[in-house]
Length: 150
Image 1 (cartoon, one colour):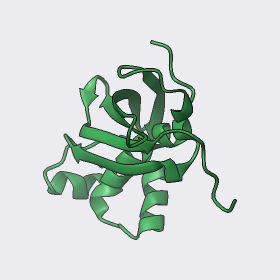
Image 2: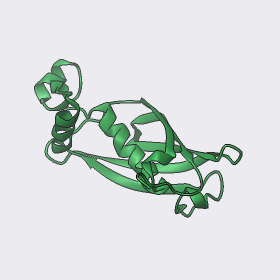
Image 3: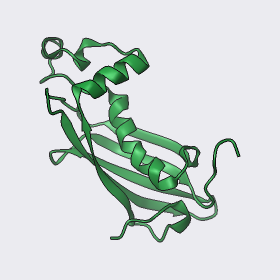
Image 4: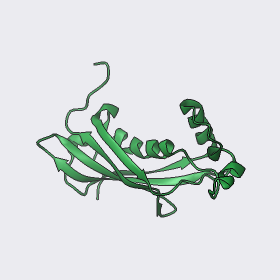
């Protein structure tokens, strides 16, 4: 299927809005920790992660969700057009040093409500073919793009 070019040009349920690859590295996790204040050592220290029963350092859940929703925001052309966003964590994203974890994010239109002027986009978020987020979906306002400050 051909990717749609924006919510004003939604063709049909089943259209793919796009796909991208996002690499999460230890640097990504350090930056996010600084921005969020979440300095849990499972996000930067292998020993702490193993002591917690994890296979290694894992990405913050919100980093994974943020990496996924960027695809929808770019498609919508306005972060304010994203009305809702939800996801469940299917499994943690292990971030090995030094190369990190490469996620594949694919967005597909799964519902269009013309009367409400919205579309639902379901996000498939995988790492090495394994689903990382479950029930990951966003509701997007269709139509004219809005711009903050106008």
